[in-house]
Length: 342
Image (cartoon, rainbow, N blue to C red; front, side):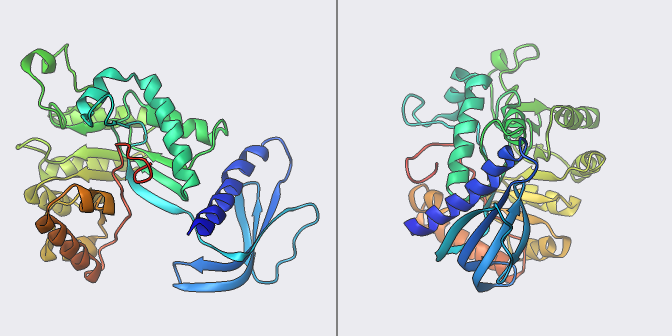
């Protein structure tokens, strides 16, 4: 296992690090000799492959490729190489810990500035890359656009990290996922911002989406049912249409069965979290091509749930798979447990 992690780290370092070097040189070519190459799309393993990488991008893969003169050769002939992993739901600029926050997210949000959280995001991004993740969707809770700053820093070659697809600030009904007091949630004292943008009318919803687009979001995230009233089917369709003008997709944070039904009916791009999705819903999701970003992981299922919920979640995942729902690996990582989350 350690060898596999090492080889993956080496390959991913090539893909990220040499993209930076290529800015100063006309051409940077790396040749990776892979003893075995895993092809997930085909479900096969290819032997004795050569991977040519030029200026940080794959150029060719095959068994008998000529290695250009002057290319750097990384010999992994005794190892198995696999493509980079994807985490479709993460929170890189949110890391609440046992000390001092006692794993209370609200405390973290109040005591840590966006600047500090941007540094956290850079550290978490490097750890994700070294763990084999080359693409991460960063789905909000990043303060005042620390996720955009992280993406830009990686793209400009300032720091190593995975490709970031960031959502900007989460959009929801008043309060977002918080339930603030009147003193802290009233206009002019909105403690929920910048974790959430309050959008309770169609005009506010459109404006919130445009704000995120302006400040660098590459995907839009809405809280479908974080409050009992939530967003209607028409509201969700409005969000989908507005985001599409900028070429962006919409993910829905969903925590109730009714919210999931509304999101599916509206044709949302992806649904986040374990929401009691059933066979009927999975069939509709498969028909519409709606992704399930369920955020079920061994960490959350083994140590933070009941046996009954564990069994229910596994059964739901199996049903989604059997119905051919597009599934994602989504950790929802926002807390720090050494060796298990980051």
